[in-house]
Image (tube, rainbow, N blue to C red; front, side):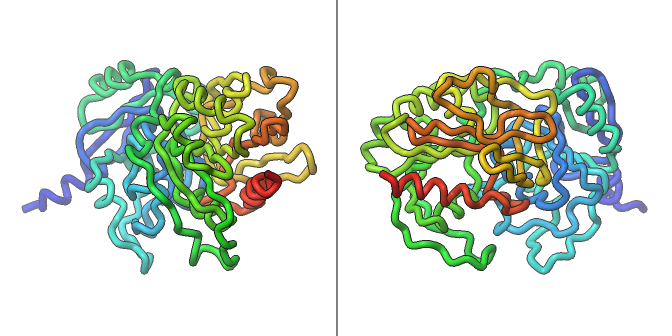
Length: 378
């Protein structure tokens, strides 16, 4: 008699895009159906960090690396402060049948099942990635129900443009953060000198760790915290974190940032970069398929230096709308889009990419020291 568990392991599933394109596969993780914006990441390592990055909230993430799950899951590698996955769904080519790392606490399948995340494996991820590159990111649905039902789910899902997803990932209450990178670096942390208030739009742990190692004492606050409440904490600087969704929809954060301009030094990353740009008078727009991966080339326009960076964003700052007082400092070498800006008269700067790079290269860690230097200047 066949074991029913074996049948479940080979249960057919489909990913259906809003345009009707169908991808066959096998279900893993939680059963049921899920919808979200279908995107892909070219990162070859760090699937644990991808799963737990709050910037992926509301998205079905496709890994272009062929085998996923081989090192299992452990809580230490989570990028979410709450140690939980944020993706809407997960798509892989080959799900590793074993988790062989000594650090592993559970398999990827068990982890997704425990957190209610629907996954699909044995998908032709090359074909899927090419389709998204050619036709753009779009909504999709994963599940074991019929193709027509999944297509209907995908077509009815809310478009990413205009969505404020920050409210789903920001904390409800302020909290302190003191943990540095520890065993992940050979560089000793600098003594805490600067008090920094972090506006948490969905921050990654390693950003907070890098700020601590740069000599910052952190107070992390919810995304809707007012400028008055932030200033009442008497910070030496303000940090604008990464996060999910359309920056144009996070109007309250733009208004807060506008009130902080010139009052305290400001540093923004990813969504924080986009919100700072809007606060300075620029506009943002949605990219065709975004930049997601740990191998994105960025040029520093001030030094001519090229950095290999980690990125995860679907929206971008419109360089043509930057005010004259704001300069573009970094551009993406693949398409010339905005990757950094500077507003000296407001003591503010930002980058679109992730200098904390977990996982990824460490070419851009100097930016955290640039922030502390700005605070040192008063």
